[in-house]
Figure 1: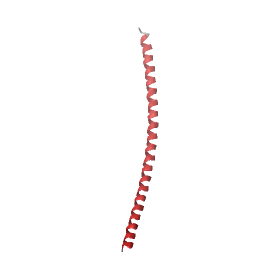
Figure 2: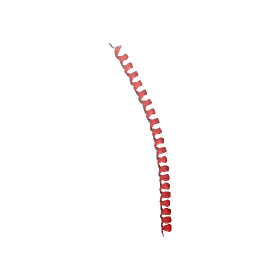
Figure 3: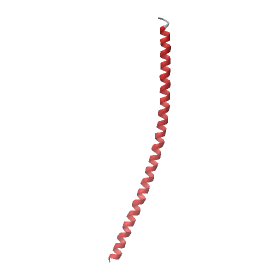
Figure 4: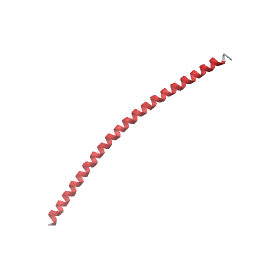
Length: 78
């Protein structure tokens, strides 16, 4: 019976060591995923800012065209 306990403790230690190694690997994987998501978020925020700027420029151009059309209408309407 005394020989079973050391063997059992050794198995418990090996099992614990295996679990710790799994957790370390998972932590590394999550760290990598987190970094990739942060980079993706940065890219998307940059793309969003670029699209908002393009949208604002398009809106300004459309407003300018509308103003020109209204002026033309007034000039030719008189």
